Amino acid sequence: MKKKHVTIIAIMGLLAWSFNACEGPEGPAGTVGTDGTDGTDGTDGTDGIDATDLPPAGTFFSLAVNNNAGDMQFGSFVNYLAFDSEDADVTTNYPDAPQVVSYETPLPPEIDGSEAEGEWIGSGTVITLERITDFEKYDGQDPVGVTSVKVKAMYDESYVYFQLFWSDADESDEKDKLEYSSLAGWSKSGNEDRFYFMWPITGYPDTDFADGNGCDAFCHYDENAANGKGYMFTEFPDQLVDTWQWKATRANPVGYIHDKHLIYQDVANLTDLTKKWSGRKGDQGNDTYIENKIQSSGFPKYMHITDPDGNAGYPSFEYQMVPFDESATFSDGATIPGVFLRSPNGSGADVVTKGIYSNGGWFVEVKRLRNTGHGDDHQFLPE
Image (cartoon, rainbow, N blue to C red; front, side):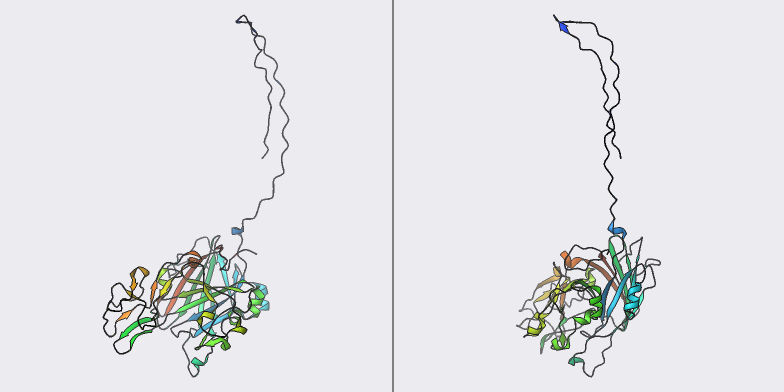
């Protein structure tokens, strides 16, 4: 706006001469001066663009689901997340890539593992899953996998939201429960249902991620299998991948996804194919759980505060965890949690979730900031 500077010159009166402490008579008022000239205005700049008014750029991603078959995963390597409508170029160039359309929402959904009427926009996309691990340990087996998952997505100026549903005959949420036997000592059993989202961060322009078959390009090399497992890592040093791992035992009860990332490993020079070579790394900060491993002594590292013979179930939490007492007496069949849960922090606490198992399947909702500001995350930013 213009700022008008007006100088008004006025003669308010004549100076009175004081002589011998006497004041003379007041003279007549002078005339009022003319208005001053306006100052020179600057030129207004062009209004900036509020990036929160723009949808994020579309991106390829990978998706996998585990049921209680452990390392047996079913997944879809190459999928595309579009915003507001399907991407015509992706439809033309990658016709086999399912597209999930994320719609702008004026009202964020409640992340509670259930869908209120009208809470989610769109009917969602059913993504067909196929077996993606093929190691010798499964020869002659026909593990039961999750063959499809339905995905919905929305966004607003601050967050992206996802909803997933898949059928699973059994709810599995007691991973690595420890059980005592007077003959065999301590052993672990049990697994959990899981799903994975994988998003490119660096070193994966969209076309490379798609042409490289998504997560299949770096996740499941048979030649890198040790003890029947294929350890995961990216193929080149500049590649970094964001992974969200929803875990029914180790994350869901505290309301967060286990947020991780994949880094490069020098495959050609691997000499010891053990877990230490895995490129899967937790994001900065605490993750969602503490493993209660059986030590070389044969005893668990921790026990529940109600032990011995407390038989605590899942979920159990860090504040209920105490060092294992090797002098404690346990009965045959007594159990101890194999994991203790805790609230994550830092970049490990980016992805909020809630999953509920009901009517033969899992219904899971997910929420994350579009821009976390963390380098170990995929950012959902405009082009």
